[in-house]
Length: 123
Image (cartoon, rainbow, N blue to C red; front, side, top):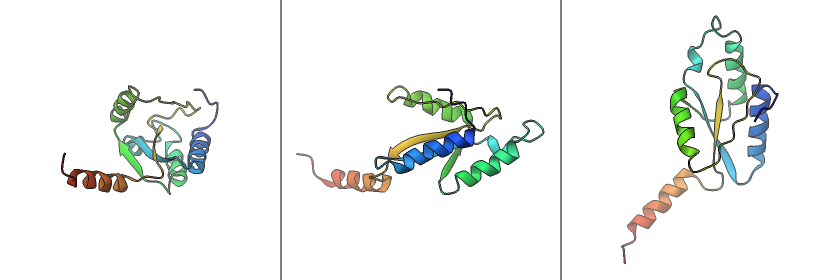
């Protein structure tokens, strides 16, 4: 979906909507290549890194190679719908990928539940 907005505007709006939800929380991924893109090849990338870093400072951000993220999205798309919001950003490796996870049930809670279930003898 074309947004006709800046990258930071879109990320801010999406995270705001997620923050207001009682159902989901964001799991954020960014391209591992981004820290290595020089301003000489992509003017404005240093400023973007600073701005997006400030925007995401309260979140854990996992960095993965771009091809790995795309591969994971492709696999996810086989089961779930994937929404791609295109912005007017034209600097390489600046994508912000957000996977929605359950807000009211953590990974630790799920792990404890599964451990309890495995302790019950099969009938």
